[in-house]
Image 1: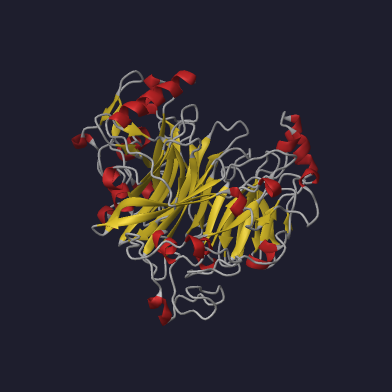
Image 2: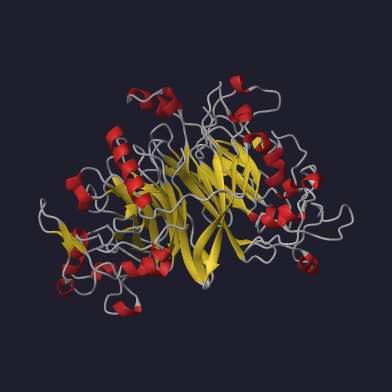
Length: 602
């Protein structure tokens, strides 16, 4: 392990000597002594100290219909779903520790306008149920969570509803051997990936699923079979399946996907020898930027090496185009993988959706000829990788002791909603905020706006133990809030810290923060905008001054003596409110967002 880390270190040094981009410095830094003012939800009533409470074991958070849902265990505000004692006893009999034999929520989805779909590990016997969103009343009978939810809370999974059908990616067994991409519920046949076939999936770690066009796209990382002669090499992948896929014939791929294809994601620093970031950590939903649909993803170096992270962006049109390219094949177990000759690919083309205009002859997938079905069964991997926009990372962090593991995006930041701001979460409780610059009408470079430490050890530690890993992030642009989940707490972080500029116009303009601007002639204090007066839709927004593109402060004098700390209830130079509620932190979530905790009691 140490030798691999040293090898990476010397590789970085060599690339650095050949023009490896240096890490940029943030315009602003906020340490923990400043961010500790932010409200924290810890799941207990005021006055209870951290040595007397249990760890929440938060698994995920999600905003739906102006409500923040927290999937955890132990402490609950409105909803408790406990494992039955028989399931707990069986879990213990199978050798699991008592702390593992609880019901950890791993799937939390809005099924329709009225229904919440929830799945939990249920003491290693996964189970799913539905609730009314308004009352949190259980609806109908519980159903099996197999292939919909993992058995173990430590296993990664993704799920989404599209056209009334549930698409999930997880493992189907107690030992986590059978990885699957699965469709269930709704009016379409149940389908899955081929079982125990390493060409399809090889120890995948699922990261994200998105509904786009005629397909569901799955983003994950897995052991690369095309590099099996070099040991366990992990590659980032994107796979897709047709939403109208109905499986193969009784002879080939019956009850299995006929449209499953996958390709490598390329996030690398170009040069004579490309430096690849292969550990896919997080992927956004599809974001519409300047007329194009993109996803952004965070990547890192392997965990047994020196920490390094990158953000790459991918045009969904380019992703789709990759799946029309050449296939990759391995002629024998010992041979190298090579491109499959295009003239030998059967027709209709494998991986194409049946029933589309180009496939009028085949109305449903089970009508495909055996040649096409056999080909897709043996050749799910594409030869070309999906290139990132501009063929290089958009943001790099290589000289720090943490990896970036989460990403959320506000693509309508600022008073005119014409800026894109990206927030990145790390394994050390650090939030990185950067501005996505545009050049020639599209993504070009990034500006490192802020770095802030949002972990609050006084409120989030359990028995003196700190777990600073960020578990999840949700952005609520309308309330100007970033919700950051750790294993034992959730912190509400304003999207900006405009109040730190006090009365200094130069500092405000130099911040280049789309959320901050200078206002002249306000009644309370010159240049100060009250949090109660934040509506950016009014014509007065034209009076705001900012220079996000250049941060030009020519002609503005220094004003250290004019720096003033104002209460957080007021937001100087702010377009969107960032007021800190005076409500008790232990009650703040329920009051701010009509909080519902999807919890799991013991």
